[in-house]
Length: 191
Image (cartoon, rainbow, N blue to C red; front, side, top):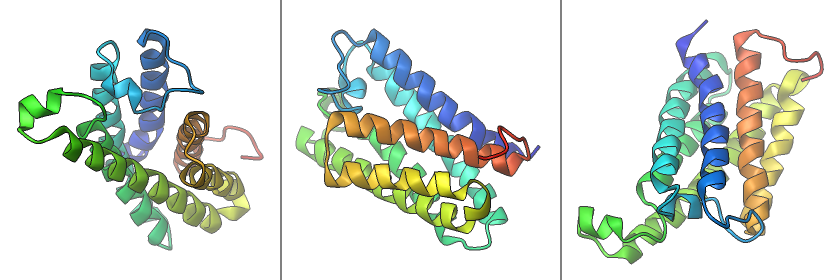
């Protein structure tokens, strides 16, 4: 199996595990109150979250090259690549911490702005990627992948913590389904 496709299988699994572990070790974390980025800012879960999300971005970048090779239309692969780079920005430009001032000598507000821009680019690009890739693959797994793009757009229009969590998990599942489809492994006949 193509190692780039393996990255597409591993990336969403890392994301799900990192999110679940980070949520468990974050005292008082509540998906209806806290945004996903809060996991990266907490002393208890910050390091695990940031390293894990950076790995998700790196594996996503590698997987995007398989998408470029296998998809007829390259726009979806391009949007997926942009989303993967943006998620690296989310990991690097963490929200609500003072650590970056010590390491980089910049004002906290620069990091908060960079973080918000990275997150906005991620959600927008991933939604666009899912729509375009889903449209191209609509006769197989595409409709499911296209549907997940709506959750990303919903979060952009209605930025509530619970909606963000649902969108992130939906993006993980859609990437996993896409990578399974590209690998030739059948999950179930209708996906």
